[in-house]
Length: 525
Image 1 (cartoon, rainbow, N blue to C red):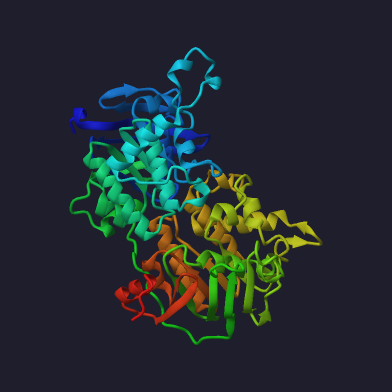
Image 2 (cartoon, rainbow, N blue to C red):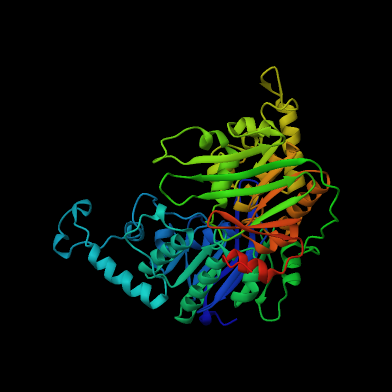
């Protein structure tokens, strides 16, 4: 490939962290004005590779070229000056502040008359930034409310803010790490429309992803990392999902779960009757929810995110918090009936719910599922510390914990396979596998499973789906909440659709996808 046509080129780049070889002799090129996908399994070295390109790490060996010129970064600031910008998988936004303040942070426009003053005393001219951002939003179809606090905006809008942050700094090469991991299908589709517009205006976009359909539909070229090495590169023209999956995993992959026939259903594991949640005088967050889940079945909840799924999950995890009497004007109050594994669960705390035999895979792994600054051992023990297998007379049986953790690491292919590794240092997919390994280790009777494969690569998705189906066949009751319609259709025995806090329809296995889509949009047949 002609180097003059390349915006980015890596030649023989390697990086190790102690004994861990994250990248080994990585070489590939990215054409100017293209969308390039860097794909691979969780832990394959994708994020490390892009962190090297962006100056967050320094390569042990190898060369980095930007627009044909070799660069050695001292820090990301050098990469930014050369026209690079990066949006990380977990957004780097200061939640209490406005979108405008987040975008200009560190690059505030200062009053010209105050150049003689110390930097920290110079007045900030927000109007100048607003003028520039208004033009950028119009030219790149990235409209946002700059005055809104970021913690009050949807994740799709936060994604736009991150991109505007790069464009505000005049980035010509945009690096996006798992950009659709937390977006709904609708938000993801709109996001790629924006990326195509950026490409058409001459920007170069590098997307780190493991989503096969996104690569084939939106990327011009791609490279596959496996175990830190490049194993395939080329154009996406003529590439199939099956071929790409096999390049990523290094073996044949079953892209669609083979679902065994339904077993005989057991007793009711979860029952909600007329379950409602809300504040006095406001529209209910949940309204008259009726559902049951029996042992030996998977009940899927479909719906666009933000229609009450999160509130239902939080209520099921901590009923006491919502059923106890609150000031009805300031605290959410729950009403109705809630039975878990034969017991009235309305006033149970989280530990009491889990003690009944309930496993929880939360939708937000960082906020609800992990202690990010603790190691894998401590995270694996969450909720398990009082299990007889792992404790005796109030003391942790360290040998038993380590043995079971290593078994889980091998079984779920958690990388790095080091019990002492911090949860924060794992990729998003490996964090998710750690949570699933922990919950399955409890062998629960009821599993409340939210977004089980969000941010997980194709090989791990295959494994997780198999484990969920095996658990269902063994008699576990599973409540599945997922923003992936394919996942809901592949795994569920029955499907209920949630819209604006209500269940507006129920469908049997094999339902027409178009009908389900209409229900998700609030259209009743």
